[in-house]
Amino acid sequence: MAKVSYANLKLKTNKTIKCFEFMGQEIEVLQYLPVEDKYDLIMITCQKAEENGIYNSLLLDMYFNLNLVYMYTNISFTEKQRENELKIYDALKSNGFFEGFFSAINEEEYQELLGYIEELVKDNLIYKNTAGAVIQSIIQDLPKNAQAAADIVNSFDKNKYQAVIDFVTAANGGRNIETNL
Image (tube, rainbow, N blue to C red; front, side):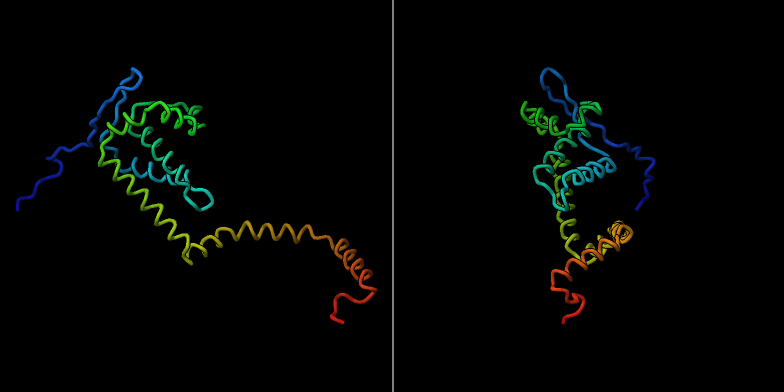
């Protein structure tokens, strides 16, 4: 079998776009997103949709769709606009933007990304229920918990503690509360 040099193939990342019209504007939609950008899209979607170790399905769907728009289209958003992503999503959704967008995005790309997100969510939830994850959480929380304990010890007032002992002893008819007698 004859070897073929990769350089001779002269390959470049596919930058093909498909367009659709929305409210008099031509929206361009990439048909392929480089894997590095796909990774970022998946990770930020999952991070933003996680609440107290659980993935919020509504937020997962919303952030996934918004991140698709951010990464695949030629629509630019200011930092100020992106401060309220719920508002952006509601505006796009309620005005029918996603119908045109989903008709233009590469279906294989969409399904691939959706599958990766579903797998990551499932794997993360399984991992979080393992002993290793619990131990990891304890190790990560140990320094701040140790600091909180040190703060309690440092703020301990022996005089106030003695006053409580004196009160309880008096309420107990003068009997020693430190013994079981």
